[in-house]
Length: 117
Image 1: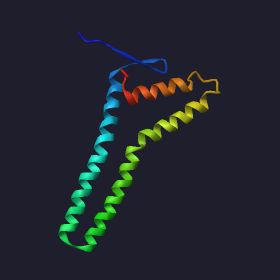
Image 2: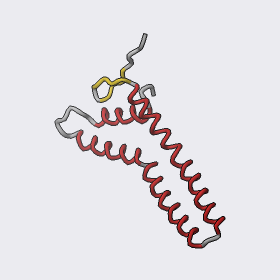
Image 3: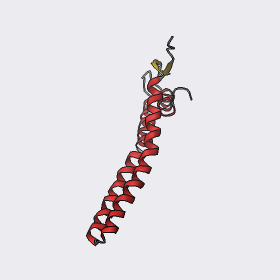
Image 4: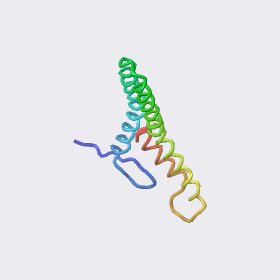
């Protein structure tokens, strides 16, 4: 027998599997991005140093810096999205919409922290 567990998000019942999958994906991204950055950086810089070519070392450093910038953007995308929705939620509190800032923030927290938290 399968249980149909629902999570409430802004007054809408959704299957709790959706927020839980989102929570797992966000957690994996937060772990995998820094580890991948370290591993790829070590491999690229290691190859360049072993080749003893100044041009390849500079290229590897440039690539590593680009990867750091991309990793920072990916790592903080959750915080940026949460900030944008928080600002929009606060802006919509004074209007006649049915959505209030607290329900939007609780919905975002449900998706980031899982339905059972």
